[in-house]
Length: 129
Image (cartoon, rainbow, N blue to C red; front, side, top):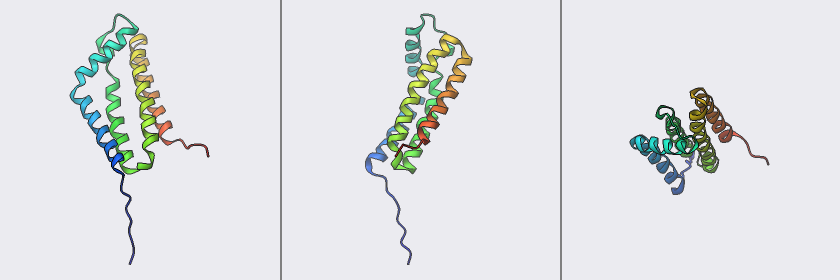
């Protein structure tokens, strides 16, 4: 007889997954409020904010939240690393929105790509022993 063992995620890991999915759903449902907050923050950097250039980070943040929730659900050991990568990427995306307002939409696109590369690098890098 072969014994099959399954790894069960602790309650805290499942709570992290539920919280990440809830935040993603909240961003989708409250996109107008989220966009208004981003426009207000970008307006602090420059007084004349073109509303079409702000609010793009939500389009990248929602898939990242869902990706991190799947990673945490499948590999509970990576909770801390995935959340740290998500935190840095979220901060980078907020900076990208400000750069897009200041420098134009090409800076926003390049900054968004750089943020995704940052997330990938932080999520898969190995720690020194």
